[in-house]
Image (cartoon, rainbow, N blue to C red; front, side):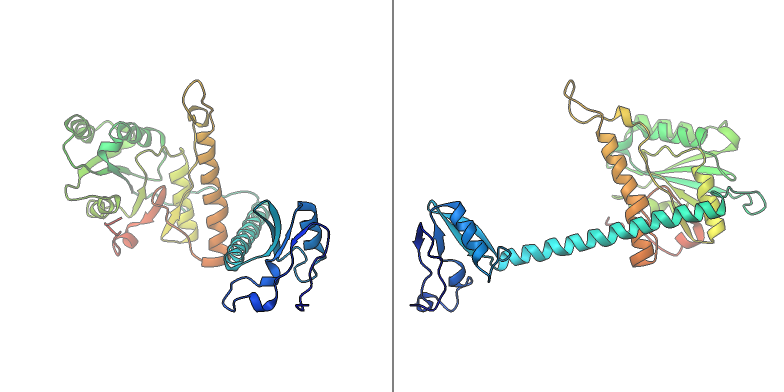
Amino acid sequence: HSGFRSFLAPGVVRPIAPIGTCSKDSVRVCAMTADCFTSLAQAREAMHLDRTLGGWLSYIAERDAQHCVEGYGFWHYLLAFCLLLTSTNGILVGLSCAFILVRRRIKTAVRGGKKECVPVKCPEASITAIIPCYLPNEQFIIEETVKWIMDEVDSPGQLTVLVVYNTPHDIPNIEARLAQMQERVDWPQGRRFKALRVRESTSKSANLNAAWAETADDLVAIYDADHHPDRRSLVLLYEKLIRKRVAMVQGSVYIRNLEQNQFGCSPCSVPCLGRLIDAEFFWDFFLQRPGQRTCFTGFGFFTGSNCLWRSSMLSRMEFDESM
């Protein structure tokens, strides 16, 4: 008699080993690893009858056509801890997001909707819209983006669009067209366009740092080369900047042409790629970041584009040009 409790059901192949046969340095307790049965049903019954394990701290593994009841080891518990940590974080973020959504709905209902900018509170302001661009990748879309902002986007005052780009080699055709656009004087509402090549630049951050020296306006908007802002988006950013008295206002991003973005190759393609990206943007801008700001960090995030800055704030900092 070894002093260990054994399951003496029919079909037991191997009894529990005596304590003297176990190494002190063994990771698993011998009593948890030695019960093997010829059928899965017997192993399940044995695991259920064992009060020590109770099915919570053990599992059934197949060893040489036998079903053995084994206890969890270190890596099992480490994985369980990581899953618990991830689940807890997800619950906290989910509750934070729910709180943000409910609070915003209540505030909107109490205030009677969002307030539009009025001339008395929002005087005219000159804005420079900076578009950093890596020309080899974005040479086919940069003109369309510039024309969209010039023709379609409202501004609270004079608007200047500055394309600041870098390229490892000359691209004569597109650079010549940017130069021609810079010479135009017939842009709507007297708007101006400038193009600046930063020859020593190898990153978006270096392009932005070089753009500050070319900016004389009090406010700076930053867009990506593939952004087509909504008509009222810049006015709304400016209104919130004045109303909240902050240094920067971050806008959100969504996918406008959902039906044109397909996943896969024809004829086996489905229009879901744009919807997936749009869902990611919605989660990021309206759930995750507001939740982090309100319940955890207490400050906002600059996502790299679609934002409005005070130039006085940008002049006191530099972006990391290695990024």
